[in-house]
Length: 411
Image (cartoon, rainbow, N blue to C red):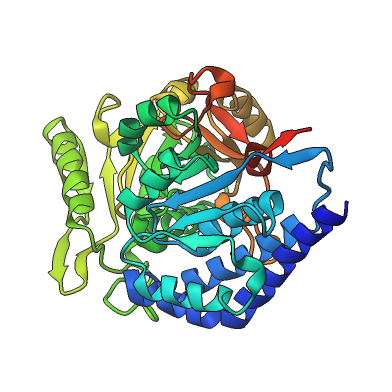
């Protein structure tokens, strides 16, 4: 019990450090990747809240650390994902004793500098090490005997590391993108729903794993009216070069844009209609207009796969076909069902076995709040998440995972 108390105290201390540096972290995040300052500031608050929530959780005292932990994220929003959802359970598991290795994307230079200066002020965090390169990180995670478990937020490139992880008897928890879907089942509160969906399509310029990417309209909905409302809501998402005033900002990696454009072009060649798409090259990257791709083919890569731009694919279908349309999806993370409770429960039953999250008239921002953070299970289906371990004979297991339990073992 005394050791566990020391570990929870570490979380409280780290939360206090981040609280003191929260403006500098948000500012550095926006300077590094040019994403909206307000969203980054909220993510810092979510990270702080998550640390404090973990510190106050009831923890099974029979659990012990597995060994060293390595945490990798290729995403540009580290305050919630890396520091809150990942470092918090790692510290709760390992305390100040066993090492914790972190990797921040190379673009996050200013953010990483603020973070390192911050933790250097407290000797309790001497076991936290930041690794500068992706190559060095995976070399450490795979080949260092002290590292037992690696948590990766990435994409399909993870496949190239599966054999080395298996050969070196290391554990891997992988979280990928989510091809998240909004389902509209009736005509209530249509403008409010359109506003919510547009925000979630464009948050962090469409590059976050929690972004909505697809909309399914039931035949019980006035499709024309809702589509016009959605267009209006997308147009109101302020775009520009200033992360302090603009919500949609340039995307630094041209490869992300070109990959999405290829999928859109293929969808258009097969009958889809594109509304409002435009791309402007700037000194900070490619600035995209929030857009809709209307009625892409279900078999298209655009509908089934993930992309990192502020664009929504929209399909109308008979209400009986909603489960088929939604489940035609390689990245099954979340579904947001907008409609009455009876319809929600009926559809939830059809989606829960294949999606990690099913929301009712809400989305991720309703569970990842700035006052509570997020300490719940995380996961996904399809290509969205898996647990790859010697305990399961290195057969990938999909579903929902308690990250603290992944980092620990029973006595």
